[in-house]
Length: 290
Image 1 (cartoon, one colour):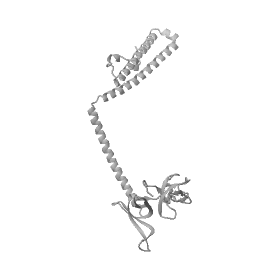
Image 2 (cartoon, one colour):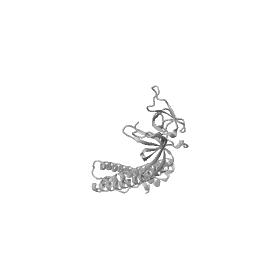
Image 3 (cartoon, rainbow, N blue to C red):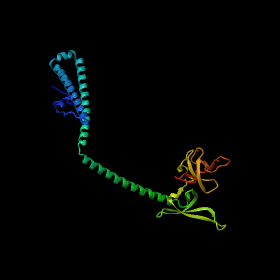
Image 4 (cartoon, one colour):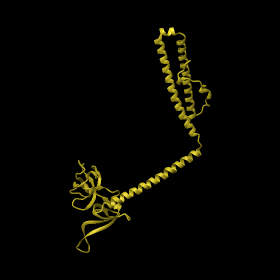
């Protein structure tokens, strides 16, 4: 007698080994076992039919010669069904394995799970703190290097700040001290000495938070692109002072001048639009007062 390898079963029905019905995952497990049991019963029926055809062929070869096409078609249909049932059994068995794994995991003691979770959280927290510290240190080193590279460059500097307003001017970086994290800058626009008629240059020592680098004049591609309606800090034409302004129109190219409307710059009841080079416009600092 011959049986297809993937469909031969000699075990007892799984119904004889089923646990009592339960709720939740146990209930799902019981249903899956019932489905698998039905699959195996149907497989047994198909195997019996296949064996019957085999016996018929062996006992009456002359009959087979007369109706060979019908017998072959019947066998093909039975084997096809046997294959489908075997594949269904594999899927059902895989689902059962997943359910059993879940039940085994849920059976672990709460205290043990908690201990594992706390340990994993602690490892993640330590790793996160270490990564953050490394990132912060690397970021600070990068910022200090960039600050040192600004020597000789013109930047926007907040040289005065009080409860009412901030004053920003174009200054030149003379030196940056990495230890104190302070810039030494020079206001190249001569100022008036209140006690004399002489002009003099002002020097300031300012923290990093008071300095904003300008975009590179010869590299418009690296400059930020502020869209229409965006508020910015920009150098007022003909001066070295920076004021808050609003971008009045869209630029076609990043190298084009910005068309800005400066706050408190009214003429005849309206704000005139003024052109400012892209390398004299920076983002408006948070909390700016004017």
